[in-house]
Image (cartoon, rainbow, N blue to C red; front, side):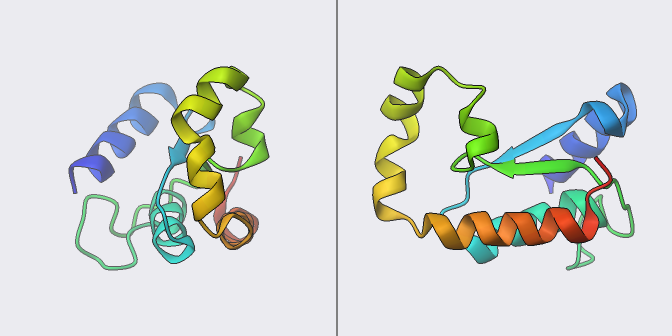
Length: 105
């Protein structure tokens, strides 16, 4: 709930078009739920983003779009191991699906 409030506050303060959300969930379904929440509103109707459709751009830390903005050695040190143990293709597919359905940016 606190993260939803922070995202909502950032979108209000900086403008929705200027906020990008980076997720790191280990499972595609969990990452997809978080992505849907910051794009289309909280589907559980439990948090500050209930019925709030921000349409924010949202990416997972394992996606190439994020990797291009991070120093390669830092990425490898902090995230590289996760690429070997997580279902990266499933996560990427889920994130792409959510962006195509809900993202305005």
